[in-house]
Image 1 (cartoon, rainbow, N blue to C red):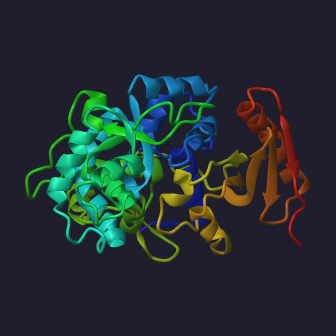
Image 2 (cartoon, rainbow, N blue to C red):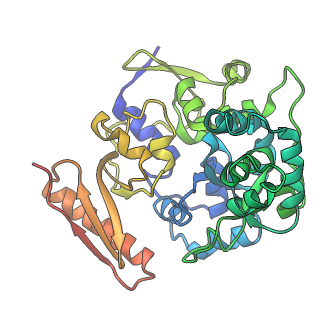
Length: 364
């Protein structure tokens, strides 16, 4: 079986993620291909798409949110994701068990005496028409369940009832409360029902979609991205449509036969990633992109800079100025390339007002 080295896996994933070369795609198609973008920080997906798409206009994504063609909702790993409306409708029921499991993993004691079906019905009625923040909804529900903290009731409703966060939350350059309303109300259609026992067409589709955007990958990587258990049968059902490799650790990696696997020596341009980007959270084994010493930064909301396809720096932006902090020594060429891309990002984030970037000294 062919062994794919770390650099080969790096280049394959960069190509799938549109980070080896920016794609000429509408934002809606990019969101669909990527399987959504993690979006608990509302403005971060705009940077994610700017780094991936040619001539990306942030107004395009804002329009998709206003027109309800993309939505912000809890899905993979029980985190807020920006996904297409079609994917939200198709995928939500398959995520229900995982969402509930993760909720109870945190709040089992607080919810021990609560009839969850009754709480779901009350939450569905409360959020059927008028958007509300989860804490505010929790305070209303606490009138019926006074022994449960309102915050916990609100969190529970976000799992028990499919909800979406409504604009202005998530619009370019705008701030707004995280107000939610029932997904069925917002989209005018309910989520697809669960599949009959023994069938898992959504799981099978998720396997194929994941590999298209992240492969080649192990089943542990798929589970890390989705948070879903019970996917091995879905993998088994589509296995004859896949090809297999091994990584340098001996793990089996699955992939789509015709998906891009570029030459490992293909140059990778500098790219700026937003907080919680797909690229560094979509795998169990993140060694193809990030050194073990910096892995913890990926779950801390650190924004990363890729140099030669690997995490090499973090970045922040204050008053329109992008500041880059290297995590390793930069060559003169690295500093030049990072500066050029950083100035382009600063111009994007400031609407052209401040194409300024500073690069801190490299660590010794």
